[in-house]
Amino acid sequence: MDEQARIMQALGGVSLAGHSIQGGMALPPPHGHDGIDDGRKQDIGDILHQIMTITDQSLDEAQAKKHGLNCHRMKPALFSVLCEIKEKTGLSIRGAQEEDPPDPQLMRLDNMLLAEGVSGPEKGGGSAAAAAAAAASGGASDNSIEHSDYRAKLTQIRQIYHTELEKYEQACNEFTTHVMNLLREQSRTRPISPKEIERMVGIIHRKFSSIQMQLKQSTCEAVMILRSRFLDARRKRRNFSKQATEILNEYFYSHLSNPYPSEEAKEELAKKCSITVSQVGAASLSQTQWLVSNWFGNKRIRYKKNIGKFQEEANLYAAKTAVTAAHAVAAAVQNSQTNSPTTPNSGSSGSFNLPNSGDMFLSMQSLNGDSYQGAQVGANVQSQVDTLRHVISQTAGYSEALGGNTMYSPHGLNANGGWHDTTTPSAVISPTEGPGSVHSDTSN
DNA sequence: CTGGATGATTTATA
DNA sequence: TATAAATCATCCAG
Image (cartoon, chains in turn cyan, green, orange):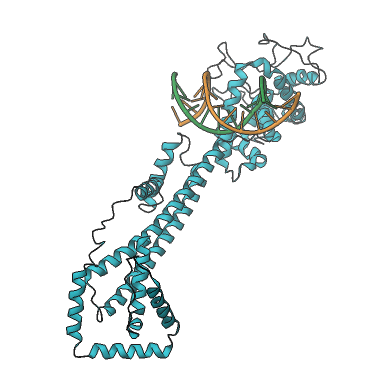
């Protein structure tokens, strides 16, 4: 703050020095508030008046006078006297010892910018730093995929930051050069020690670095905001659309025997769901795939935990699936009859669970002609048809007619409730001990 | 406002 | 590394 005043004074002195001499009147020393009496006020008034009356002509005159003064034979002597006087006053020394201690605030900002990858080395190390910082704050999951958006924004901030920084630097340099030139020129008429120039440069630099600090501060704020928003967005839960849930549920219940969608299946589901889940902003495919994985993880665990609760849902989707698939199956049946049902039932399915009716649904519905699944259709048509008949009958008022517990059992689950090491599931609806309360919901 | 539903995250495990 | 299980955080119907 003090510096600024001093700069202004110095600069003012630079540009006006020549003129104020005119009236034989020097500016009062900047310090010394003591005794601003009327007389001095009067002086100031005079000075102001003189300033106001400066004209081009007077400027030219001043220039001429200055030149004259420079050429005066007494000038060197006068100059040395002035130097001596100035030396004695010791004005110039003051402030030279202002070795600016590293501002802790600035250091903090610098460190943070470095850690966030905003400042520091370009792309290479920078992104690594960013990744490291992100990994430190987040979890294992936020590696590359989910970070792309965040990174893009961070890069944006980084670019702006660097551009601005450069601008400031350039301005600072320009200004410094300008002032130096002025001072150098002035040094011919008044004594200016190199130390003084140095001090001036220091002042200018400090001034500009304080501006830079503001830039850094606002950059930090921007990063923080970006960060919090990003994290919030991650934390915030958005329910899937009804359609998406529908699709996922259909897959889940039709693959109850092995509800572990392959990468391709996930992709397929993600694609189908992303149409409706797109509210998540720029949801990339990989992101939606991630959501699908989450969903299946949650679904599996919750289904297993409380199968009873999901019975209704299971039935609902089984029925739905069946109805939807009925036509397809019918077609398949015809196909298999007209063509040959020779497709080897084992096919390539090695250890893969045999698809139940639902599996087929997917093969028709989702994978849409996936050869590997499709091949099994023919092979299993017979049992499928049976299954379907059963299920369809349920559609029209299930539960009551059949004792209320003819439901989809967790046929994929083994005794432990594990899915993974199960024996080949019996792809049929068996009224195996309806876990817990097989409360037949008669309403619909 | 509350409790259940549900998507997301974290931790443990094979 | 994928998944299970536990837990967190938010949504939402009642």
